[in-house]
Amino acid sequence: MTIGMTRGRSGHFVKEKTIAYAVLGLFLIYTLLPLYYLVISSTKTNTQLFSTFGLWFADDLNLVRNIEALFERQNGVFGRWLANSALYSVAGGVGAAAVATAAGYALSKFNFRGRNLTFAIILGTVMVPNTALVIPLFLLFANFGLTDTIWAIILPSTVFPLGVYLMKIYIDQAVPDELIDAARIDGASEVSIFFGIVVRLAMPGIVTVMLLAFTSTWNNYFLPLVMVTDPRLMPVTVGLAQWNELASAGSGGQALFSLVITGALIGVLPVVAMFLLLQRFWQGGLASGAVK
Amino acid sequence: MPSPHRQRRSRLSGLVPYLFLAPFFVLFMTMLVLPMFYAFYLSLYQERMVGGTIFVGIRNYRTALGDPAFWEGVRNVAMFGIIQVPIMLGLALVLALILDSTLIKARSFFRTAFYLPYAVPTVIAALVWGYLYGPNFGPFTQLAEMIGVARPRFLSESWILWSIANIVTWTFVGYNMVILFAALQAVPRDLEEAASLDGAGPFQFAWHVKLPLIMPALYLCAIFSIIGTFQLFNEPMILRPMASSVIGRNFTPNLYAYSLTFTSAQINLAAAVSFITATIVGIVSFVFIRFAARGSGPTT
Image 1 (cartoon, chains in turn red, brown):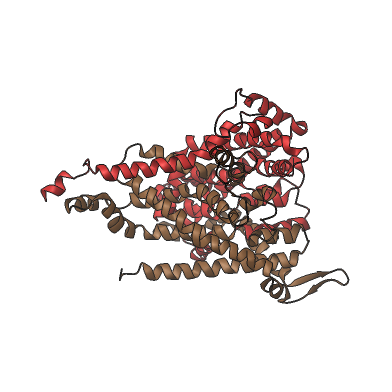
Image 2 (cartoon, rainbow over the protein chains, first blue to last red):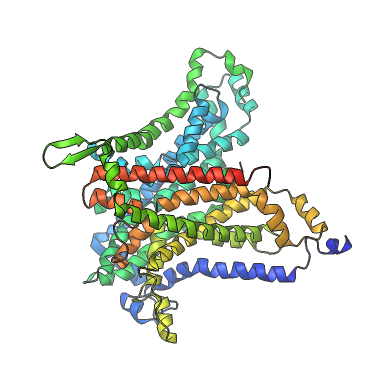
């Protein structure tokens, strides 16, 4: 008993602590290695990529020159890709969050016919392999002449069943029934209840869903790859993959490697910055989904 | 829980929840359900050079099921799932348990750092790892040459699946860790006091007390990982130009459906392949859930 007490919370466990820190340290190196390599490589010219050691800087830094070359290539198409990624992700994120909030509210606070069935179907589709739907969706869109338009990427990005599930759970605990009932008795309209009470109280949940949808759209590759062939409509992911293909094919495209790497660095910055600034929301969103 | 007020409201107000649900419902039907039915419809037809499109019943399914190229992709993702998913979840679990223990400091720093790769687009993760692996200017090749050992052959036929497994592991360990960590945070703290009074070390406590309590979260991670594995596409697609001789057009079922659609214009067969893949995922997930439900029953 006394021995157990002395080994309490703040206790010693020197061996265990060493092992724990060793595991964390090793994994930290593994996690940061590719990001470190990306940063180092983006400061090198194409020749330096081949002639200097990959995990350390070359004699001179060429990041600015790489960025200039990146945005000049093909009449500045990279800037266009960045703008496209931003447009698709913002539209997808805001759209998904708006639709999911309304649906989550309906499922959380109303008792209606088909409620349980709707909820079950939504949960079921969380498990449907999403990419299996992309090709059929492409064929369907092709019939309506919607491929090679921004809608071919934005519309599918707003369908986010997991977001509905997260919003339902969030509204369950963040919006008290009494508040809604009181507002109704006061004669408030359903629309003003939704925007005045539900949206305001559920804001952290809405931000979470928006972030998740924004990131998944920014990071999406398969959907835009299938849907658009016009380079002026491509997002960063598809454009960079195409340049990489050219670079790897050799024959003159080789000079592209440093541009692909610099482009990758710039393509990663917005999501990483957002992730770091708003991590409280990310982790919150995942947490509430997992624990329930 | 609905309040009694609601029952007294006019008949029109019964429509309210449906109106809130409507935008999602419309998008859900058009973007998810309709393509599913359309794919099923397509999978039952065949386009002919002469005679246009004709109904062929299950012939596309028989073609796909009898196609060794399709099964090669299935075998790849199955092997990937059997080996990569347990390694990834094992790592995620170990990290989550360490971060949840009272052993270490700077927990939120480690948690954020480990979760960071999840924010990196898989295309970019695959590009960067591809360059790290690369035989031309990859640092591992350079290191091997410096110390005079054989070059690692990350992009060779026998390594490629595991090189891809590493990219997927790198991207998703932190994501799974955060889910498991959240579940661990819900474990009552007084259990820990009791265990430490009984003289249990942190490792014993983690293994015998915490682990059984977070099994449901672990199963959730496993299901998502299994589904993700069957959808494998981005990483092999990005590595293809760097390793074209070893990543075929049928390397995964998804890659096969993609190349059937866009390279050989066999959309009907592609639809059947998509459907069979989805069915296999469904069966594997179902079997896994049943197996997991039995494993976590009251007897254990």
